Image 1: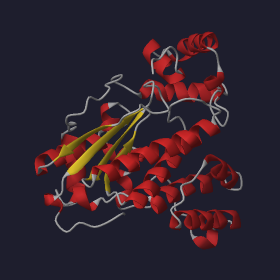
Image 2: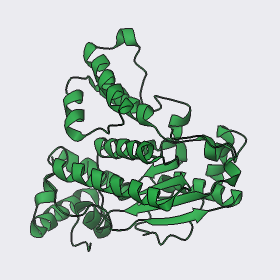
Image 3: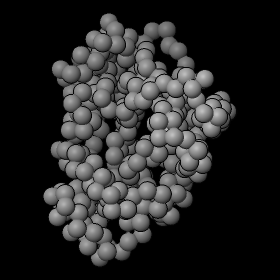
Length: 308
Protein backbone atom coordinates (compact mmCIF):
# COMPACT_ATOMS: atom_id res chain seq x y z
CA UNK A 1 0.00 0.00 0.00
CA UNK A 2 1.32 3.41 -0.91
CA UNK A 3 0.44 5.38 2.18
CA UNK A 4 -1.82 5.82 5.20
CA UNK A 5 -4.34 8.57 5.87
CA UNK A 6 -5.45 9.52 9.38
CA UNK A 7 -8.93 10.84 8.53
CA UNK A 8 -10.37 9.22 5.43
CA UNK A 9 -13.60 11.22 5.58
CA UNK A 10 -11.69 14.40 4.76
CA UNK A 11 -10.04 12.95 1.66
CA UNK A 12 -11.59 13.23 -1.80
CA UNK A 13 -11.56 10.27 -4.18
CA UNK A 14 -10.78 10.35 -7.88
CA UNK A 15 -12.66 7.78 -9.96
CA UNK A 16 -10.66 6.81 -13.07
CA UNK A 17 -12.12 4.94 -16.01
CA UNK A 18 -10.08 3.70 -18.98
CA UNK A 19 -11.46 1.97 -22.09
CA UNK A 20 -9.77 -0.03 -24.84
CA UNK A 21 -9.10 1.95 -27.99
CA UNK A 22 -11.76 0.27 -30.16
CA UNK A 23 -14.00 -0.77 -27.24
CA UNK A 24 -13.15 -4.42 -27.94
CA UNK A 25 -11.87 -7.06 -25.53
CA UNK A 26 -8.20 -6.82 -24.51
CA UNK A 27 -8.11 -8.92 -21.32
CA UNK A 28 -8.54 -12.51 -22.52
CA UNK A 29 -6.35 -14.63 -20.27
CA UNK A 30 -5.19 -14.57 -16.66
CA UNK A 31 -1.72 -13.36 -17.58
CA UNK A 32 -3.23 -10.29 -19.27
CA UNK A 33 -4.92 -9.37 -15.99
CA UNK A 34 -1.91 -10.23 -13.82
CA UNK A 35 0.62 -8.22 -15.79
CA UNK A 36 -1.65 -5.19 -15.91
CA UNK A 37 -2.20 -5.48 -12.15
CA UNK A 38 1.54 -5.54 -11.40
CA UNK A 39 2.12 -2.55 -13.68
CA UNK A 40 -0.59 -0.52 -11.93
CA UNK A 41 0.75 -1.38 -8.48
CA UNK A 42 4.35 -0.58 -9.41
CA UNK A 43 3.35 2.73 -11.00
CA UNK A 44 1.23 3.60 -7.95
CA UNK A 45 4.24 3.14 -5.69
CA UNK A 46 6.49 5.08 -8.06
CA UNK A 47 4.20 8.13 -8.17
CA UNK A 48 2.86 7.95 -4.61
CA UNK A 49 -0.69 7.18 -5.70
CA UNK A 50 -3.00 5.61 -3.08
CA UNK A 51 -5.26 3.09 -4.82
CA UNK A 52 -8.40 2.39 -2.79
CA UNK A 53 -10.41 0.31 -5.29
CA UNK A 54 -9.55 -1.43 -8.54
CA UNK A 55 -11.49 -3.55 -11.02
CA UNK A 56 -10.30 -4.96 -14.34
CA UNK A 57 -13.07 -5.83 -16.77
CA UNK A 58 -12.61 -7.30 -20.26
CA UNK A 59 -12.35 -4.05 -22.21
CA UNK A 60 -12.04 -1.40 -19.51
CA UNK A 61 -10.79 -0.73 -16.01
CA UNK A 62 -11.95 1.23 -12.98
CA UNK A 63 -9.65 2.75 -10.38
CA UNK A 64 -10.43 4.81 -7.31
CA UNK A 65 -7.45 6.76 -5.96
CA UNK A 66 -7.09 9.33 -3.23
CA UNK A 67 -7.05 12.84 -4.59
CA UNK A 68 -3.57 14.26 -5.00
CA UNK A 69 -1.76 16.52 -7.44
CA UNK A 70 -3.51 16.01 -10.78
CA UNK A 71 -0.17 16.00 -12.60
CA UNK A 72 0.92 12.99 -10.53
CA UNK A 73 -2.27 11.16 -11.48
CA UNK A 74 -1.74 12.00 -15.16
CA UNK A 75 1.87 10.75 -15.05
CA UNK A 76 0.74 7.62 -13.24
CA UNK A 77 -1.95 6.85 -15.81
CA UNK A 78 0.32 7.67 -18.75
CA UNK A 79 2.93 5.19 -17.56
CA UNK A 80 0.29 2.54 -16.85
CA UNK A 81 -1.15 2.91 -20.36
CA UNK A 82 2.14 2.98 -22.24
CA UNK A 83 3.85 0.24 -20.21
CA UNK A 84 1.02 -2.23 -20.65
CA UNK A 85 0.48 -1.37 -24.33
CA UNK A 86 4.16 -1.93 -25.04
CA UNK A 87 4.22 -5.28 -23.24
CA UNK A 88 0.89 -6.41 -24.75
CA UNK A 89 1.75 -5.42 -28.32
CA UNK A 90 5.12 -7.16 -28.10
CA UNK A 91 3.60 -10.35 -26.74
CA UNK A 92 0.87 -10.59 -29.38
CA UNK A 93 2.72 -9.04 -32.34
CA UNK A 94 0.14 -6.30 -32.34
CA UNK A 95 0.48 -2.70 -33.54
CA UNK A 96 -1.32 0.51 -32.72
CA UNK A 97 -2.93 2.14 -29.71
CA UNK A 98 -4.35 -0.21 -27.09
CA UNK A 99 -6.21 2.37 -24.99
CA UNK A 100 -8.27 5.41 -25.84
CA UNK A 101 -6.19 8.58 -25.81
CA UNK A 102 -7.76 10.09 -22.71
CA UNK A 103 -9.13 8.48 -19.56
CA UNK A 104 -12.29 9.50 -17.76
CA UNK A 105 -12.08 10.89 -14.25
CA UNK A 106 -14.36 12.47 -11.68
CA UNK A 107 -13.94 13.61 -8.08
CA UNK A 108 -16.13 12.24 -5.29
CA UNK A 109 -16.36 14.25 -2.08
CA UNK A 110 -18.90 13.11 0.50
CA UNK A 111 -19.32 9.85 2.43
CA UNK A 112 -22.55 8.73 0.73
CA UNK A 113 -21.18 9.17 -2.76
CA UNK A 114 -17.94 7.42 -1.81
CA UNK A 115 -19.95 4.41 -0.66
CA UNK A 116 -21.96 4.50 -3.87
CA UNK A 117 -18.76 4.65 -5.95
CA UNK A 118 -17.25 1.68 -4.09
CA UNK A 119 -20.37 -0.37 -4.77
CA UNK A 120 -20.28 0.62 -8.43
CA UNK A 121 -16.63 -0.34 -8.97
CA UNK A 122 -16.79 -3.64 -7.10
CA UNK A 123 -20.16 -4.57 -8.63
CA UNK A 124 -19.10 -3.98 -12.23
CA UNK A 125 -18.75 -7.76 -12.86
CA UNK A 126 -22.13 -8.34 -11.20
CA UNK A 127 -23.79 -5.77 -13.44
CA UNK A 128 -22.27 -7.51 -16.47
CA UNK A 129 -23.56 -10.93 -15.31
CA UNK A 130 -20.09 -12.41 -14.80
CA UNK A 131 -20.85 -13.34 -11.19
CA UNK A 132 -23.68 -13.01 -8.68
CA UNK A 133 -21.71 -11.31 -5.89
CA UNK A 134 -18.86 -8.81 -6.01
CA UNK A 135 -16.49 -10.94 -3.94
CA UNK A 136 -16.75 -13.85 -6.39
CA UNK A 137 -14.80 -11.97 -9.07
CA UNK A 138 -11.05 -12.39 -8.95
CA UNK A 139 -10.17 -9.22 -10.83
CA UNK A 140 -11.73 -6.67 -8.49
CA UNK A 141 -9.36 -8.05 -5.84
CA UNK A 142 -11.95 -7.74 -3.08
CA UNK A 143 -11.30 -11.19 -1.63
CA UNK A 144 -7.61 -10.41 -1.22
CA UNK A 145 -8.40 -8.08 1.68
CA UNK A 146 -8.26 -10.90 4.22
CA UNK A 147 -7.11 -13.93 2.22
CA UNK A 148 -3.84 -14.36 0.34
CA UNK A 149 -5.09 -17.46 -1.49
CA UNK A 150 -8.82 -16.92 -2.16
CA UNK A 151 -8.84 -18.75 -5.51
CA UNK A 152 -6.28 -21.48 -4.80
CA UNK A 153 -4.79 -23.62 -2.05
CA UNK A 154 -1.84 -22.52 0.07
CA UNK A 155 1.26 -24.67 -0.47
CA UNK A 156 3.39 -25.07 2.69
CA UNK A 157 7.09 -24.46 2.21
CA UNK A 158 8.02 -28.05 3.07
CA UNK A 159 5.52 -29.37 0.47
CA UNK A 160 6.59 -27.02 -2.31
CA UNK A 161 8.89 -28.06 -5.13
CA UNK A 162 12.24 -26.34 -5.58
CA UNK A 163 10.87 -24.75 -8.77
CA UNK A 164 7.93 -23.26 -6.86
CA UNK A 165 10.18 -21.91 -4.12
CA UNK A 166 12.47 -20.40 -6.74
CA UNK A 167 9.51 -18.78 -8.50
CA UNK A 168 8.49 -17.18 -5.20
CA UNK A 169 12.02 -15.83 -4.72
CA UNK A 170 11.97 -14.25 -8.18
CA UNK A 171 8.53 -12.80 -7.49
CA UNK A 172 9.66 -11.27 -4.20
CA UNK A 173 12.85 -9.93 -5.78
CA UNK A 174 10.94 -8.08 -8.50
CA UNK A 175 8.20 -6.82 -6.22
CA UNK A 176 10.69 -5.38 -3.71
CA UNK A 177 12.44 -3.54 -6.54
CA UNK A 178 9.11 -2.23 -7.90
CA UNK A 179 9.50 -4.17 -11.15
CA UNK A 180 6.27 -5.39 -12.81
CA UNK A 181 6.03 -8.85 -14.32
CA UNK A 182 6.05 -9.58 -18.04
CA UNK A 183 4.82 -12.34 -20.33
CA UNK A 184 8.24 -13.84 -21.02
CA UNK A 185 9.06 -14.15 -17.32
CA UNK A 186 5.71 -15.71 -16.44
CA UNK A 187 5.99 -18.22 -19.26
CA UNK A 188 9.44 -19.25 -18.04
CA UNK A 189 8.22 -19.65 -14.46
CA UNK A 190 4.99 -21.50 -15.32
CA UNK A 191 6.68 -24.18 -17.40
CA UNK A 192 8.49 -25.44 -14.31
CA UNK A 193 5.39 -25.55 -12.09
CA UNK A 194 2.63 -28.11 -11.70
CA UNK A 195 -0.96 -27.03 -12.42
CA UNK A 196 -1.63 -26.75 -8.67
CA UNK A 197 1.50 -24.66 -8.13
CA UNK A 198 0.75 -22.48 -11.13
CA UNK A 199 -2.72 -21.64 -9.83
CA UNK A 200 -1.46 -20.84 -6.34
CA UNK A 201 1.38 -18.78 -7.80
CA UNK A 202 -1.19 -16.51 -9.47
CA UNK A 203 -2.69 -15.72 -6.07
CA UNK A 204 0.83 -15.12 -4.75
CA UNK A 205 1.44 -12.55 -7.50
CA UNK A 206 -1.66 -10.58 -6.55
CA UNK A 207 -1.02 -10.81 -2.80
CA UNK A 208 2.63 -9.78 -3.12
CA UNK A 209 2.08 -6.83 -5.45
CA UNK A 210 -1.26 -5.72 -4.01
CA UNK A 211 -1.24 -1.93 -3.54
CA UNK A 212 -4.91 -1.48 -2.65
CA UNK A 213 -5.59 0.40 0.59
CA UNK A 214 -8.74 -1.47 1.60
CA UNK A 215 -8.92 0.54 4.84
CA UNK A 216 -10.25 3.59 3.01
CA UNK A 217 -13.63 2.20 1.99
CA UNK A 218 -13.77 -0.06 5.05
CA UNK A 219 -13.68 3.11 7.18
CA UNK A 220 -17.11 3.98 5.75
CA UNK A 221 -18.62 0.74 7.13
CA UNK A 222 -18.50 -1.14 10.42
CA UNK A 223 -16.46 -3.99 9.00
CA UNK A 224 -15.64 -6.00 5.87
CA UNK A 225 -18.76 -8.18 6.13
CA UNK A 226 -21.04 -5.15 6.35
CA UNK A 227 -19.36 -3.64 3.31
CA UNK A 228 -19.91 -6.85 1.34
CA UNK A 229 -23.54 -6.96 2.41
CA UNK A 230 -23.99 -3.36 1.32
CA UNK A 231 -22.62 -4.26 -2.11
CA UNK A 232 -25.29 -6.96 -2.41
CA UNK A 233 -28.09 -4.45 -1.87
CA UNK A 234 -26.90 -1.67 -4.14
CA UNK A 235 -25.04 -1.77 -7.45
CA UNK A 236 -23.86 1.80 -6.97
CA UNK A 237 -23.34 4.42 -9.65
CA UNK A 238 -20.56 6.34 -11.35
CA UNK A 239 -20.22 10.10 -11.33
CA UNK A 240 -19.69 12.56 -14.14
CA UNK A 241 -17.94 10.08 -16.44
CA UNK A 242 -19.29 9.43 -19.90
CA UNK A 243 -18.77 5.69 -19.66
CA UNK A 244 -19.27 3.41 -22.63
CA UNK A 245 -22.16 1.14 -21.68
CA UNK A 246 -21.48 -1.85 -23.91
CA UNK A 247 -23.58 -5.03 -23.74
CA UNK A 248 -25.78 -5.91 -20.78
CA UNK A 249 -23.91 -9.19 -20.29
CA UNK A 250 -20.27 -10.25 -20.65
CA UNK A 251 -21.08 -13.95 -20.30
CA UNK A 252 -20.98 -14.35 -24.08
CA UNK A 253 -17.38 -13.11 -24.09
CA UNK A 254 -16.43 -15.86 -21.67
CA UNK A 255 -18.19 -18.46 -23.82
CA UNK A 256 -16.33 -17.15 -26.87
CA UNK A 257 -13.05 -17.38 -24.98
CA UNK A 258 -13.64 -21.03 -24.13
CA UNK A 259 -14.56 -21.84 -27.73
CA UNK A 260 -11.62 -19.98 -29.30
CA UNK A 261 -9.32 -21.62 -26.78
CA UNK A 262 -10.69 -25.03 -27.77
CA UNK A 263 -10.08 -24.18 -31.43
CA UNK A 264 -6.55 -22.92 -30.75
CA UNK A 265 -7.19 -19.23 -31.39
CA UNK A 266 -6.06 -17.93 -28.01
CA UNK A 267 -2.81 -18.50 -26.22
CA UNK A 268 0.66 -17.09 -26.66
CA UNK A 269 0.10 -16.37 -30.36
CA UNK A 270 -3.52 -15.11 -30.36
CA UNK A 271 -3.59 -15.53 -34.17
CA UNK A 272 -6.85 -13.69 -34.76
CA UNK A 273 -4.97 -10.42 -34.09
CA UNK A 274 -3.16 -11.07 -37.39
CA UNK A 275 -6.16 -12.12 -39.48
CA UNK A 276 -7.64 -10.04 -42.26
CA UNK A 277 -11.19 -8.75 -41.82
CA UNK A 278 -12.49 -11.38 -44.26
CA UNK A 279 -10.75 -14.16 -42.30
CA UNK A 280 -12.19 -12.79 -39.07
CA UNK A 281 -15.68 -12.78 -40.56
CA UNK A 282 -15.25 -16.44 -41.52
CA UNK A 283 -14.14 -17.25 -37.96
CA UNK A 284 -17.05 -15.20 -36.62
CA UNK A 285 -19.50 -17.31 -38.64
CA UNK A 286 -18.00 -20.50 -37.20
CA UNK A 287 -18.20 -19.16 -33.66
CA UNK A 288 -21.75 -17.92 -34.13
CA UNK A 289 -22.91 -21.40 -35.08
CA UNK A 290 -21.19 -23.07 -32.12
CA UNK A 291 -21.88 -20.47 -29.41
CA UNK A 292 -25.00 -18.60 -30.63
CA UNK A 293 -23.25 -15.38 -29.58
CA UNK A 294 -24.67 -12.10 -30.84
CA UNK A 295 -22.97 -10.22 -33.65
CA UNK A 296 -22.13 -7.46 -31.18
CA UNK A 297 -20.23 -9.87 -28.93
CA UNK A 298 -18.49 -11.51 -31.88
CA UNK A 299 -17.38 -8.17 -33.33
CA UNK A 300 -16.05 -6.87 -30.00
CA UNK A 301 -14.36 -10.16 -29.14
CA UNK A 302 -12.63 -10.52 -32.52
CA UNK A 303 -12.26 -6.77 -33.23
CA UNK A 304 -14.26 -6.85 -36.46
CA UNK A 305 -15.10 -3.50 -38.00
CA UNK A 306 -14.63 -1.53 -34.78
CA UNK A 307 -13.89 2.18 -34.93
CA UNK A 308 -10.94 3.50 -32.96
